[in-house]
Length: 364
Image (cartoon, rainbow, N blue to C red; front, side, top):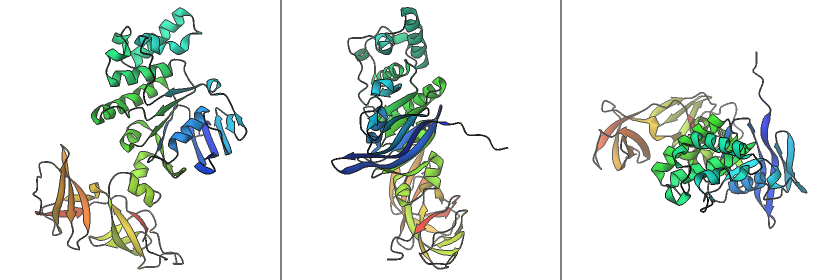
């Protein structure tokens, strides 16, 4: 029996946003169900913040619709007022009130509640965000990470139907961002909150979101789970943006086999062929993606590669290796294997997901 999918809480349907005759967002379509955490990920200028602003009601639509819980909140010529959308927002700079205590900041949007109901809700949110002991302190007395939690608690206090997070960790250092990303996900899941995050940082996206839309020039290139973005990229842009890797020349042997200089690789995704080829025109040239975790250090392997560069990452090294052909690959190696620049080491491949794209020059 097929499990029935819940109806979407949020829907973007063919959304265009235009500035000065130029489309900043083009044909944007995606959906989130209740309790899901989504992310719009991409480089600066890709349209992700514009999409968030349109969702919040700050930008008009040139085409398409945005629906929240089945109700149209934006379409060309119509936009429900931002304050009527029941959407909470956490800004990059947190926008906290310096003259209010932590409790005062969190309860700011609850002025229509009774005093006892407001106190109870504030206490719940302080407990949820780990700020119970800081209720009477002021924002400037707390760390950046604690201030971020205040902003999150304040946004959650009115129980919004949807929470928007615009680069929420951009002002924090890398280590703190990684820790708070995991904490943020736990808080949102505990509260059952549907949320959408905008970020340029794929590590944040991976840590927080259930589903990620990688944007490029106003469009979503792939809307998928982090695992699939990494291991099953839809196109070369996704493969280049997500994670690290290099492309090696390959030659198609059959519908699911490709030959590279390491040997033949078999995958479960049909190999791309040149335009006009039969089901698989053998001999087609393709570019095969190798991730650092596909290349395994193995002293017993007859295939040797020269260490060109290495980056120490604590538990592991990221080695840049030169193959006998002169091509370079990346390899993640446990850090107790500390090899010198210029040293030759044995390597082998363990590729669980063969990713290949039509050769860049094919069909030209």
